[in-house]
Image: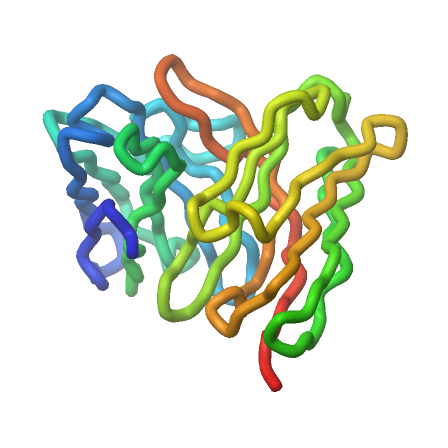
Length: 110
Length: 121
């Protein structure tokens, strides 16, 4: 069972801004562990989108941004494009489980 | 270009064994921790195991402890996952992933294409 909770789906029109939440607890995000985000297009492997709460790897458009506050984190996609249709997952570390943990995943529909 | 290529997946009966392999290129393999991550339609993504650069430290999710063993051969740029006593709930796509770390937690910066494992009689 995932310990990081995300909304199952979000949708938006091209050009709009959408946000995806990632709710954790005091043993993971709230304990100060960084949050990372992945994008997974249909039939492909996950791809790192954001590391360390808000760092974009080379090649990731600046339309994607991350933030973290308290026991939760968020991924924002601005200027939504058709190619952004994918599943998105947050990930952190949990000190109670002593394991790397992923969110439940969010499907973005454009 | 970083590349991770998994192999070894397949259909196995409950209680059986399987050995997954991952051959890596495009980076200095011996400089990085490596991981196995699996994905099922029902449970989503789940980290399975990590191994340190030199193989001296290994970490496992609770469900894998005692059944799975992660190893590496730095001379062959290869990562392995020996899976024993397989159960139906181990059915998943298994990904090999390279590990990097931020200030307070680690993440998976490159992934292979995955190899499917099905445990069924």
